[in-house]
Image (spheres, rainbow, N blue to C red):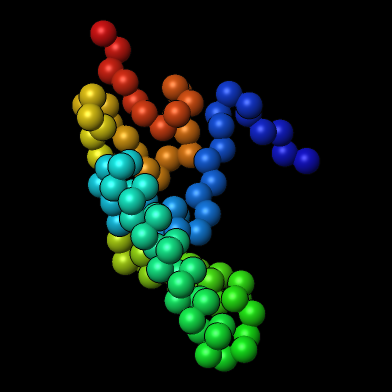
Length: 106
C-alpha cells in the first residue's frame, strides 16, 4: 500500500468545481461558475427526469460529467493572481505551503 505524505494535502475537485477551475481565472470567478454549473445541471436534470421518467441523479451526474470532460479537453489549466498578487495555480494538488498559493520569500 502506498504511503500518503500528510504534509501535502490532496485536493480533489468534484462535479461543477472541477469544470469551473478550468473556465475561471480567479478563485472568486471559479466559485461563481461552479455554483452556476451546479444549478444548471440540477434544474436540467430535474426537467429531463420529469420528461423521461428516469432517475434525477442519473441526469445530474451525466450533465456534470459531460461539462467536466468538455472543459478538460477544451480549456487548459489557468494560472491566476490572487488579490494580494500571489500566483494561484488551479491545477495543483498542493504546494510547499499546503494551500495552492505560492508566496514569494521576502
